[in-house]
Image 1 (cartoon, rainbow, N blue to C red):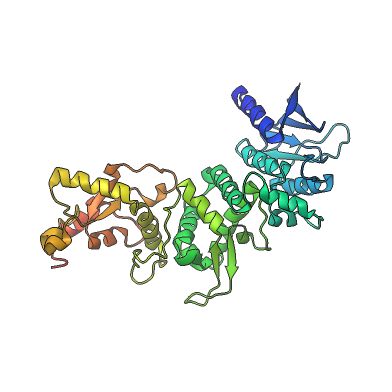
Image 2 (cartoon, rainbow, N blue to C red):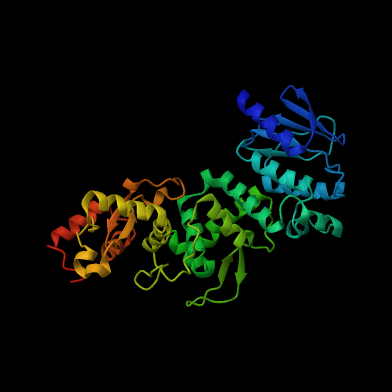
Length: 397
């Protein structure tokens, strides 16, 4: 059962989402009535697996401003029931109100979607996903003019959904998200995405990335515009890659959501300063690691801070692995040059957004590549042992 603190917070969140309401306590929840006299109810639930909360909503119009009809609301609620896919309690008095089950972590996403419906702020795509409903054009015009522009609103919706889902997103799915974002023009085939996550089966990438896209659709309330779940977050293009595979282009709104959440760096792999690895950046997990780490390591503020710290302490930017010094080799042309490597393992990506100076290492270009090469990210000490076992460093001489 929910704690009293969670119940109190839930009441506050529902009050905001449903507008001005009056509350009435029930034995196992509460009833609320808004200014239009519409009655809804929230129940604490521990009967059906996965249900912490069950919400029953009247299909009557949710607003008197935008002309949303009960038919529109019912279609929206029926879609929410389908997305939830959970068994729920039944009404005692033969009411036909939809009842939807949620875990406590899923409630904020639902309330955010309901609030957008209530203010008429669904996009044309979302309205069309509700079926053959004749949506008045003034409603669509009002939706685009209210609170947030469609494009900006979608960014916020994606952010809310991703935040809600973060504890459930696997490391492999995170690798695919970051790899998709980092691909040139954010365009990549599912097969390459699968390789980034270490999958070898021909259908595994579509299965796992599609599962993530479905979860995002469920959490955001945005239906995929095509039968393919991936169209929730990306657009299919018939432009083939060099291996003859079709590709997916990540939506700008979704990419912006990833950036604003801090899951990726706010620059794209199409930039010329992202190097290849062995000629193919998507060849294996090592390449995925390189993409993700490169994005982290291109935060120039902390890079410069790390370089300044080392210069103040050691008066040189010698590689921590092989001791190569660009200034010593190239003179003034190499002064103050080095690369800065992030030592945090790839598996921690996305779970930690704060980087400390001790997380970073000064390295030369060759050692940086070798740290990232292969399926396992090497530690500085491991690569240093390899270098020492082969005698003094002579690279770039």
